[in-house]
Length: 340
Ligand SMILES: [Zn+2]
Image (cartoon, rainbow, N blue to C red; front, side, top):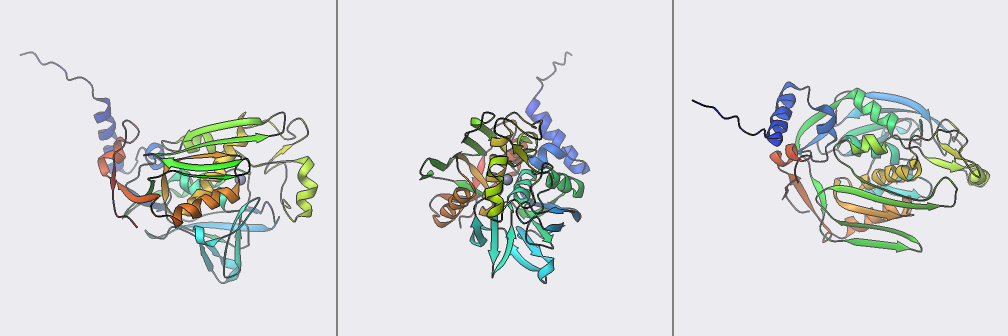
């Protein structure tokens, strides 16, 4: 009897391989944890901490990230103010100019965008972020140090189904030459353009789909930047008191003071990092295509509040199990869940 081998089914093999790794607990860690399509909420397994100084305040601060139960979301806790808690959601957005700040009952948490960006990039839904001062540490100016903390603490899958905010209708916002919009899509992707009058920058556009590890490879390491020329003005405004060559790219009139750059287009990639962090204030991961041109924290957060205000723009969805595992090898099928 002749046995003919079946054609190799790559998709099926991937699916089985992942199931096996998941069962073993060793998991295709990187790909699954960072795949956009997660069926269940996630937190971290253990507490993890770091310390540094705030970019704008220059104030020393220690941060501890703790696991949190399903449904918690990301909650900041001021340990220097009797553990006062501020949820990382749109309604608590306070000031947005050079950084995004949250405020509740007069208590401030400043420069939240990089750590929130890391949570989105790593697929962490629930965590408590304790800090003992008013501003998150700037560390190296990117999201990398937060990503490394989360990796060290490791991810824990939770029992609650993860809900996504799936965009159903487009929304476009303009302000002078600034633009931001979101369009319906089955995945989360961002396209960002900047036009900065500097010989190293000029017009840069970066487009990325934030799944399958793209965030870690292309976005997380991009650092914030500022120019020597604007330094005095900003310091006079009470800003960038903690800025140094160790925590931001310092632009001179025609170059970079503290090169080399981590990416030739590191500037626009950092804008994507900030946008992802600000959109985390939706409280759920988004399924949609976000397009931004010369936007900033104010427009990012304005988009978030416009989306949340108009419930005809989106629906809450959950992702079915098989689609989640096939997500990076075939187009994912999104099933509608409850609509809030
Ligand atoms: Zn930033």
